[in-house]
Image (cartoon, rainbow over all chains, first blue to last red; front, side):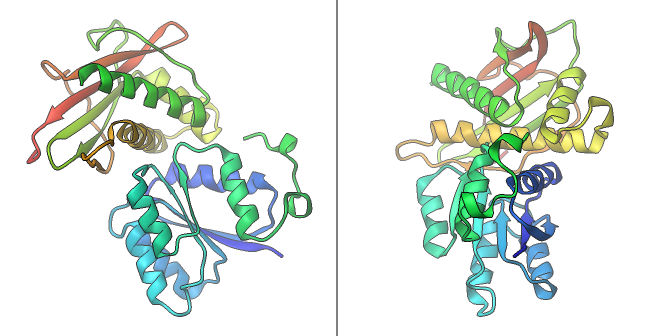
Length: 140
Length: 152
């Protein structure tokens, strides 16, 4: 099964890096959309099926916290897993995200393996069963 | 506090550059005139209830190009100017975030602003702290830390 992923970050270069990490992770990815902020992400979600959101927290227009709140208010989107990839390190703020229903928080700078681990957990595939590419082949 | 922040800044720079840019740098003395001019500048502000801080980063063109090509896994000649500036903003964002993690202790809670890439300015007079960055022995740029008024 291929999974559709939405990457939300105001940095185009960071979106590229995350996309590359996903590509090298070995998971079967169907569509991979990109949004510059929470509002763009909500617009994409109106017309597209997404299985996982990887989102920055601090963004102009609509930040990640507000995006998460909007998702939780929407009955059709509230179960969509959201993992934050953020520079935020304050434990209280990270805990707030988890309390609101975020599935995880990855701190920037990150090692690619961390994203891969979250993909494995959320997509419900074990390393052995789900990987088309091994660690050795991952050249990121 | 000055020494604590300077150590936190060096630690943040090393962590970010080594983890996501695969670059190991050395640190020299305070920022100052160099024979190799800087070409790019980015900054990010941090604010707490008590005070504000500004991190300004200035890099030489060769170092900025090396950073962006490593981050994007592209040949140095294939990184457009717009992408290079975006990488510098993200670098500044991450360094600011890690730095905040180091100083975000006790009752003082810091908030990180949005990074910007801007025109090169002259060195501020009497910065709170600064350090020069070197790659393979060559000057690569400066990182300057200022304490700023909250209303700024």
